[in-house]
Length: 287
Image (tube, rainbow, N blue to C red; front, side, top):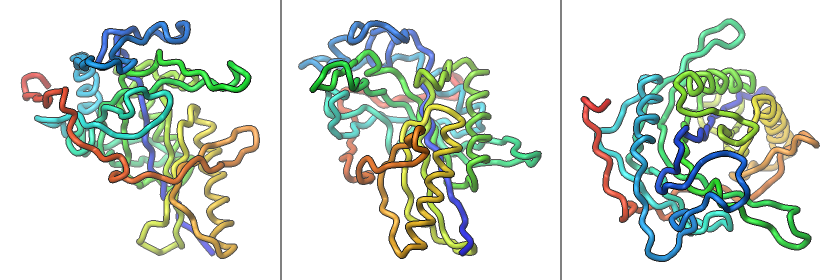
């Protein structure tokens, strides 16, 4: 059977601000664990977030570069879930009113010009980091990264192969670096990518069940992870099985993807407007 590949990318870029999105804590990379986490980052009782205005400038710069629609009003929402490295029990993100929507990215792949639509780019805070191996029977938590500004750039599912995905990612990386809105050092996690992959019989129009491969931090691993997941999905379906919508991780040593958890949908996160932050109003003069 011949298959068509459908790929969408969610790229997270840490924005180049000296302080975090809702607190005055430093964002400098490589500091000793938990030395750059304020009361706001630790979610202590009674603390309130204050928006870092600089993040709006940087987000709007990307919006202009991708011919995106910049919202005259956008809001922050609470995305509710529990992880040990997210002390609030929710993430402040943007859901139904993102700051940027409907952009496009043009790039060249194998001598052919291609254009991929960008659904949205929204602001959110990063989580902390779980450290395995620091202690014999426990996982350590470093909250230095908690609250660092992320701009999540979401493509339409219009990418058709792994090489095209890498070409798209490299072009986006070059724009982000040129604008100086992020250092985009993938090895340090300041730019990382979630890859959504599905397959369908050639000629079909209905999308297949997708899986999401989380937090890939190099161009090479994006390409290899996509190839690996395509082969896995083909084998599952051709053996009579069904693809489950889930979140997976890529094991570079074994060159395979492995299951992490079932994939959540929007209802699972119980989004609602963040009550501690006012709507963001942006006029044409500011843009």
